[in-house]
Image (cartoon, rainbow over all chains, first blue to last red):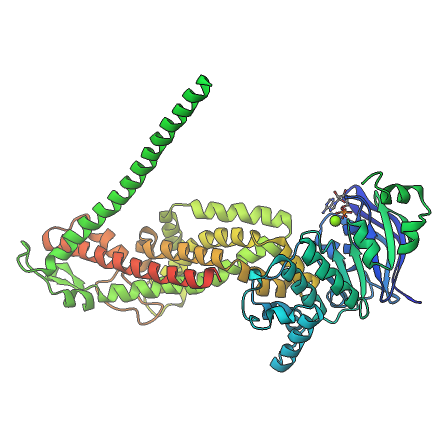
Length: 250
Length: 301
Ligand SMILES: Nc1ncnc2c1ncn2[C@@H]1O[C@H](COP(=O)(O)OP(=O)(O)O)[C@@H](O)[C@H]1O
Ligand SMILES: [Mg+2]
């Protein structure tokens, strides 16, 4: 199968500090790829190269090549266009301080969608897609800040879905949530992977094992191992992967 | 154990002591305000009641009068009220958009080194005594206005608005910039991650999120514009009558009226200056109340 992202020889520097070393990875389409590794190993940094959020960090410098469906995302695609194709859900739910409806309609509106009917449809579809519709359909015009943490995170997923992206990047999307809300979001990911390519950073190995098809293990800015999740967890090829998974460090 | 007790006792005493200090400070503040109000209103309202020792004056004539000639006994502040409104709103209308754009530029767009120069420069502007703005207006702005004016002098409503605008800019910019930088980074990231442009992010997310701080900045700016006296005196022209009909008209405002004549006024004339102060006071109260209402409604949605 053709990969969604092909990353070759990727290096990333924050000033003089090298946060990513010679990363080579092919992220498959329509599967869930989990990024695991101890805190500070560069998982978030890597994830944020995929939609160029690292551009916001003045000191960040990148070398190497990242292709999305064969196009170089740093030269062939406009960065705003890229981000409509590659959505992102953050660690801490970050709804905008506006109504639920306006949160979802935000992205499409920025792309120039004005038609009320169409926006209504997008809002409903996206909220259904994020399994949130039934909970909020009567309060679409209420502020999103009044939702619970788990609802806010699903709202952020809905907001990403509203753009009809090809890929959704998630950076520890459940780490700020309680177990029940976490379960809901995980169930949602099951649904989402039918339609989208998902790349998720998680610090929970159980979560990676539960929801992902592929797992990448990072250590100190290097990609140590990348394979089917089954294999990584049952039969890791690298000693360091095994140590991490069996809880010997991290 | 014993030591603990004495420590506790000392804390209680200290606690009471500071309670007293805070209360005293609050009382002094409240008392000062009350005294000022009583004094101004007492002196300023006296001419409108019969039996005033220096003769009475019709309140209606005072409020609606378009002529202020103490030598012939006419005390109308109607035209000053209108001119004060013109000047204040003119400065806000021109100043707020400029201040907003400047603040956005410093906080979001300018490279760090440039923001590092502009920000302290603006803070410095806010600290300059107002009379220097007046001197600047007198030396630079009125001659400039004169070039375009159909009248023989550059003293005008326009000059007042320009000087006031320059004066309120730093206040508003400083407050708004702080408010913009206080907007959580996560909002901005969320917007950009949805494919929004930088400008879209600023106008649709950052500024609305900073709304409460922006209103605070505007309120402070309005306060500074209404109360400003010294700078205005030097560029206004201060005529004895006349509502501004064009931006080139010379104007007299409530504040300047008091400052110009308080030095030599006596008897009824002096009282009428206090009456002017009463009007100014009420004028400022109304604007503050309106702005506070706006902030309450728009600030915390
Ligand atoms: N904006 C930044 N500037 C400088 N260093 C950074 C920045 N962001 C992350 N780092 C550093 O890069 C390394 C990787 O960070 P990160 O990608 O956040 O790790 P992870 O998500 O795996 O915990 C860490 O050492 C971190 O301190
Ligand atoms: Mg991280």
